[in-house]
View 1 (cartoon, each protein chain N blue to C red):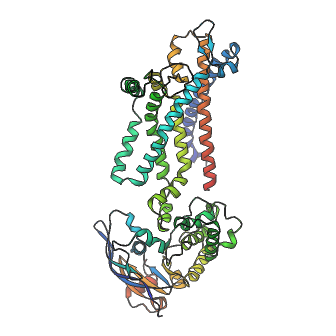
View 2: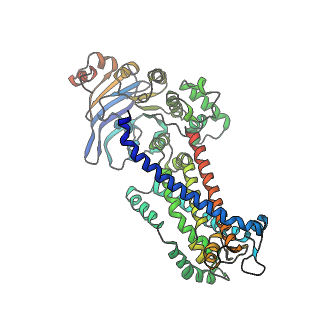
View 3: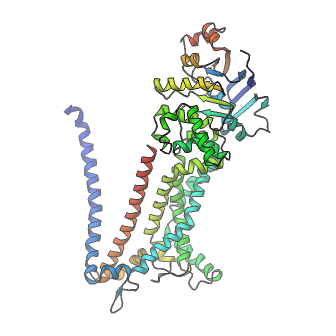
Length: 253
Length: 293
């Protein structure tokens, strides 16, 4: 696999007050591929994910050292505007969190923020995004109905549509299927595979089968450290580190 | 099965009895209010009562037109709401969304304590501070007037509205804010486009509760509104709301007289006004719940 590196992480440390939550993380995320972050609860994988779009900025006690480069720009340098960054790095959350407004308005929320006012253009973006998240056929007749009336799986795909509506380059997913049933999970996984042809996807998952199914690269985290990093196939068939092997064979976690 | 329930029966009975007594007392008050206000309708037509322009209950012949009193109640309440509601909502947004946590922990209790301020003290301030100031600076012929009362009443309802609106804002899940930020929204955009619309039903309820409190408020208007039963044409005209009319006249009225029944009728009007607002609040809440579910 010879893909361009989209995200490069160097010596990343993160502290919540005195506690160190991430220790010396260094890895690269290839462009237009799915990178899965796996590891037991509390290992820092979600915290790491939230570093990539600077969502940790909202936590007052959080302090970060080291570098994260996206397209060779340090996102923690003083010149980086976190608002700009988040337009480029979208995010899908653990629980579906559609806004309490219509399906259409949910998807159009981001584009409207960024100054798209033309109705025709918005219609086009909404349709394209909903098709992109494989939701269009199910909702095209009720675009102006409340988004909260959709099922959990549909809501999560709506959140994905909402994220891709602003045309990000990177999509971060924080355990996007943990609140969904198996059928809805399968659809979202399928969608993640589809998205990777146009976006760089970083997905945190609890579920190792999911990582094996959807990702190209797998990163294993344990207690705030990155233990192993490599092509998914290799991590799951011949892990180099004993702890990775113990985790993926279900000895702990 | 019977045995396992036995322990639950006694407390259930007690709670049932207590709530029946509570409801019975409320119904009795309502019954009393209606019963005591009906006789006035035999003496004066309801149209005359509601829309009559003259309130001279002690003249001979007496006039029982409550229109100036109703307008007095509504005008003071409206002016107080215009002064207090925008301020309260902004304050709630500031406390809930903008100020640092330390300040929030200080501000919220301080504002809630302001709500315990005895209204008679506010009325006193209105009389000795605001009234002379108004005569001097606003060329009011009476310092005790609509604006004075509205100002004090505004101060009274700010804590209620702010505190309840803040609760409503705080109940908006963090998930929604995160989703907005993650799409590249600024804090202001997140507040105006996501948090405020989502909290709107709760905020409206807070406003209605504040307004209800204002309509029923007696002491402030008794002391600071001036007490003239006229239709106010400017903010510095004195008014005589329903509440202060009842409070000031009930003590001097012979029990069972027409005047006495007229005052009960004024009380019934107040009850109907607050009941209407209550129903409106309930309706808003129910609609909001349907939208969210």
